[in-house]
Amino acid sequence: MRLKIRKLGAVSLVSVIAFTALRTPALSARTASIHAGINAVLAEYLNESSDGAKTDSEQTPAGSKADTQKKQKKKAQKETAASVNGYQNLGIANVDNYVNIRETADESARIVGKLPADAGCEILSTADGWYQIRSGEVSGYVKNTYLITGKQAAGLAKKLQKKVATVRAATVYIREKPAADCAILTMVTEGEELEVAEEKEGGSLDSEWIKIRLDEEEGYVSAKYVHVSEELKKAMAYTEITRDGLSEERYNLVQTALGYVGNRYAAQGTDPEKGLDSAGFTMQVLSEHLIYVPHSARKQAGCGTSVDTSQLLPGDLIFYGIGSTISHVGMYIGNGQIIHASGSREGVKISGMFYRTPICCRCML
Image 1: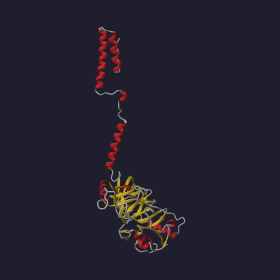
Image 2 (image 1 turned 120 degrees about the vertical axis):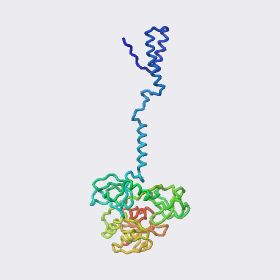
Image 3 (image 1 turned 90 degrees about the vertical axis):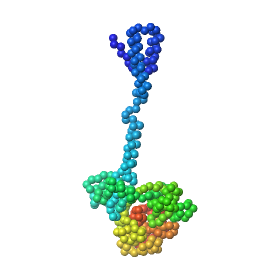
Image 4 (image 1 turned 135 degrees about the vertical axis):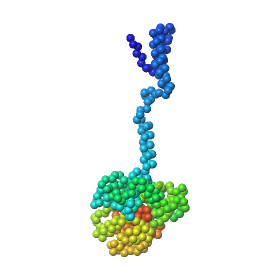
């Protein structure tokens, strides 16, 4: 008969040995042999335990949660390191003015946005000479000939990116000087991106105040109400208006204005090819409909008839500025939005009419 010995836990084995020792003071040769076998198994078990081996219930499986988390962390670190300005597959608009973003990969498809010169986008896919992209809040398709990609885009991004202070409170005051008790120039709303004007003089990124540009003016914003980051320009959404309830004159006027979304800004600019400032933009659009106004936001505010903000119609002008001094103008396009030549960073864009505090409104028709 062959004796089969199973490997037991340390406590059980010790108990067996102790019990046997008590009952059999004088061991026979056969019994001694059995005990020698038990002692060998126990020694093997204890040696494994002292070497750091774990019981089955303590073993960590190869695909454990800890291993998965480590892999995910490494993957995230790798992806972050590979991104440029938050883009995993960066494309930069290689155009003089802007490129149309279309709803589908077809040159006759509806325009959903404009990608300004030097603006960045995420390339989502490519097929048949088109890129599917996302930039800001706009998604659509552009011809691949209009984008710089790969290492060239990554290198170019370092030169084109600008420091931007994004408003992260419902409303924030822009002040004349870096102090809470100085004059309020205007008020801006959450989500507005303000170009950082300087980092050292007056207000630095390490201080409580940051000097910024808002349209054609400069001022200071409290650092605790904004988030500062390096950003590339983004796409502008293209808004289509309906003719419902609008005169043909107003409808055509707004359609002309919308055609300029994405155009370049230029200080004192009056040439659509070289760039427009805010007054140059409204002057240009109105002149195309045989309505002539001066090249000055302040002087344009003296033309036409006064309109309350609650009575605005598409095609009317809204004026902004510092305090009560007018220095900026935009055209109302309906649905609480205006179109205006904002500044060098974004050019002609669409904003909410209360993105900053309006001073007055005028009808030129």
